[in-house]
Image 1: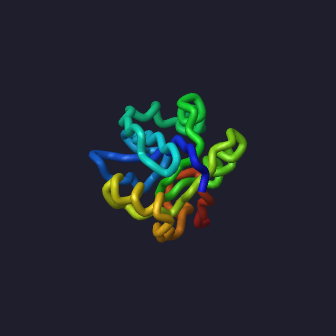
Image 2 (image 1 turned 90 degrees about the vertical axis):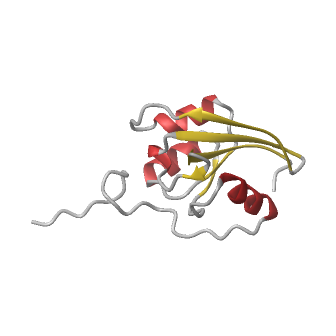
Length: 125
């Protein structure tokens, strides 16, 4: 685990929001030497392709702890140098953060499988 991180968690009303790009808010947490120094809640950018990764890069985020996200977002975040920890449970932010910092978080499936998330869509003829 890195000593100093700026972690972005897509949220809504204090809970981890399960869909990365559609989260109404982002909680940005500054961690130094494994300790939480500051936590700020920001409004998410307008939902459009690549908006969230660019927003987080502009905020100087090093990591994203999130539920599900599409392959395009994963790739874009990686290109921006942001580490993705996907498949986190939809729990209160403090709990998700505590588990992440203690390395006790249990990640589920981090890919989005429903329509509108930029994943692979199956069209029935």
